[in-house]
Amino acid sequence: QVQLTESGPGLVHPSETLSLTCTVSGFSLTGYSVYWVRQPSGKGLEWMGRMRYNGDTSYNSALKSRLSISRDTSKNQVFLKMNSLQTDDTGTYYCTRARTGGFAYWGQGTLVTVSS
Amino acid sequence: DIRMTQSPASLSASLGETVNIECLASEDIYSDLAWYQQKPGKSPQLLIYNANSLQNGVPSRFSGSGSGTQYSLKINSLQSEDVATYFCQQYNNYLWTFGGGTKLELK
Image (cartoon, rainbow over all chains, first blue to last red):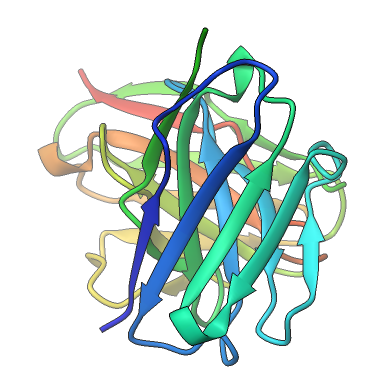
């Protein structure tokens, strides 16, 4: 079955770079796009970016200057890197996959805290 | 970017009541709209896609409607397990955006 699992450092210091990994199973990264969504604690959802099935990427314009998404298809992994982190980047980061419309499959999320 | 304005921000309703949540898009999204339910500490779960299609396994008391820029989620006969936060999301222009969320509580 389709599974997505996020992993990452948990704690990042201000101004540093966040690196997260989404490991997928049950589907191929060359057949489906994977998306990153984040949620500041107690707040709403924000789409961050997409790794398309063909390797193309697209980004939220508000984050584009700080964000990079890449993948390793041989390892079934999608990577997120975001630089210049600040305290308002604290929250839960999810990777997700669409089905016929909307995001039908979600990882459990990984909590990232930006603090010195 | 398309903006999604969701209302109300919070809602209190009684068991068995019918609840409506609205979502207004800043431009026509041609029914490319999804609704999600999120319970505390959990990942969002897809309820409705393409504005009115029920995701597999979702109870039939949930329904979606709308077109153009105006959409709504209806919950019939509210159950205790429906207490959650609900989000709308548009996916029309490949720059996905979410509504601000509606927190549903029991009265």
